[in-house]
Image 1 (spheres, rainbow, N blue to C red):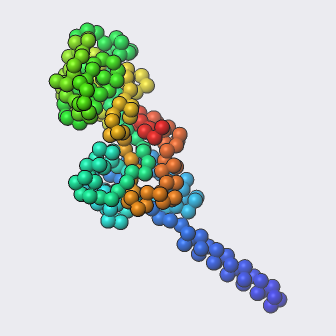
Image 2 (cartoon, rainbow, N blue to C red):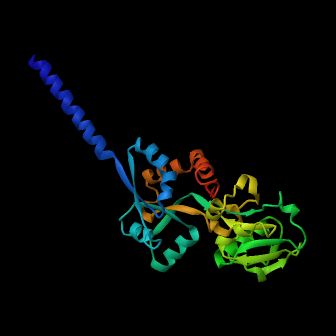
Image 3 (spheres, rainbow, N blue to C red):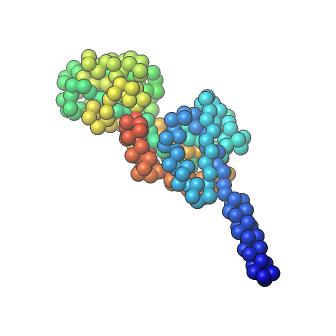
Length: 269
């Protein structure tokens, strides 16, 4: 009886030790986000890696100036809210030792039309509405150039303006308005560049209403591709790279379509 009790006690102690060891081996990764809606994309990732001993904890920031500071200071382990251009500017300005470890998405600036079925149908003298702020207008013109409608002068980079158009064979008239208003002009113009979020708000469907699609390849150095960032010293951390891999999935691409109505484009392919 004593021998049996001893065996049971040893087994119990072994189980406790193994449980404690398993708990010790778990890794908690604090992920900085700036929009609670992003949790829709990250929840499946969180669930997947939890089974591998990685616990993701969301930290939501209400200000874009905070996540990189928090990452650099060790308050979080990763963040996912910014594109390369923003990150590079933050590094140059503040000297953060931060590195992108995986691409995620680009917010789409598609060319939409309520009247036409293709870019080829845009008539001579047709009208296209574009956002009037420097960043979005530059992106819009790069998309329109990729569609074959205009040619922009060489060397104008990410932020060309209307005066940088050197060839406009259809004599397209560009109607400059606030980014939030391009969709509302669709009844009055032939086409419009509409930012992803505003397209969703306007009930536009990329599959049926877009006549040309945005793509990360239209911009130099993946400028507007969003990233997962880590401290440079942790750039090869296996747990962090596993999180990135779990995000870069067919499941995430499907969520872009179903939950975010096509406002995001996968940028890791």
